[in-house]
Length: 87
Image (cartoon, rainbow, N blue to C red):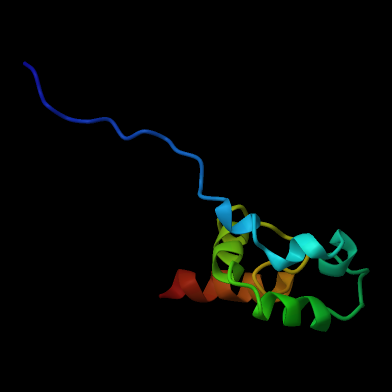
């Protein structure tokens, strides 16, 4: 028996958002501050970045546990993950 089904092809996630991301202009210490340090400046830069939502989705999909991604801290991403799980 022959079926005409097409197997899905595994593709890499779209990472083009990183090419123009504003975080590329700042050092990693900006987005991975020492414990207890402010994340305000990193969040402000993220807020002006066109790739913010793609960055946030990447962090959520890949369970990034440290640093500021898509304008959210570790705790804020955890809260968002929990809220999405309820919805």
